[in-house]
Image 1 (tube, rainbow, N blue to C red):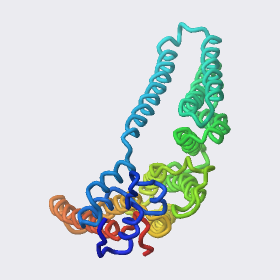
Image 2: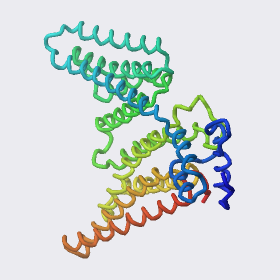
Image 3: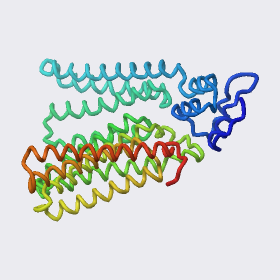
Image 4: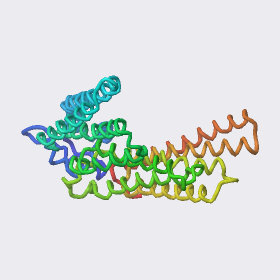
Amino acid sequence: MPHLNVPPQDKRIVAAMDRQPEGPIDPDRLKGVALDRHLLDELSQRGTISADVRLESLNWLHPAHLWARWAMVMLMAFGIALVLTGIIFFFAFNWASIPDLAKLALIEAGIILCAFGAWLLSRENLAGRLLLMAAAVLTGVFLAVFGQIYQTGADAWQLFALWAALITLWTLIGRFLPLWILWLGLINLAFYLWWDSTPLLRKDDTSALYLIHALMIGLVLLAREWLLPDEDGPESEAFHWLSPQWTRWLLLAGMLVFLFPPLMIWIANWETASLQVVLSALVAGVITLVLFLAFRFWRPDIPALAMEFLMICILVVMGLAILLYDNLFDSLGTTFFTAISAIICFAAAAGYLRHLLALGIDRGEVGQ
């Protein structure tokens, strides 16, 4: 490859990708190099690398066999979901004609078979993890059927809390992300139903409830970021299963969903808001700021910042619309100026994100 006058970052990548006479690129030579499709396209357009090197690098980054593996995983998960759905609808349709003991025995047999199959296949096998997930779902079905047969009189939140408690050990052992999502969803649902059924708590002030949900998910997100090593640090096999980026985005999206209502409730009722609403909005705003700083400097992540900016822009536009309609304009004027403000707000957010992308924040090339 001819020597070109390129920036130091490009030189490091070109040196790592320089082919040896005996064959294609050695993947070990790319360790420590922040490489993605966008950077390869940029280097190719500059003429820093040849088209052949770009093609080989793309084949290494995105092997063709990954599509087949992805399709196999999706089909297997879809099959398990269909089987579980069929079991649930079987009991729902034939409820009256099945003896009570048969109902419980069939579900227990399903739980035992799924758990035994997961143990045989081990947690490292995808089929074993899916069977463990099936056992966890059937546990909830068993609790629901048991409550229907014997009319235990338990509150709904107790069902979901007990369900989460019973599958906690499987969740810890399995290290399977969908199982963790199920467990976290059960915990949040149980807490919501408990809050709704407790007479001592006020039902009209929901800001605190949303905030507590956001904090619960935030603790899980913090644990994920804390346990997962830095990209430049040594890899840890113990928590490697947490590494997919979508886990961060899913948890962050859950947090933002629950942070949005306290802020929106305060914006819509800022003149008459109670102290609890004001404090909840203040805490939600502080958490949003902390999330921005975390994903801007500590764990740079463009999609995470994009989700935050989406929520902020919606809050700004809706708050401005309420202010204009209540104090200055009629519906037509409010609509016009709200549309203008939405264009400006979203354009500014997109421009800032493009600026960060150009700086290479998603590849960790800049620190500020």
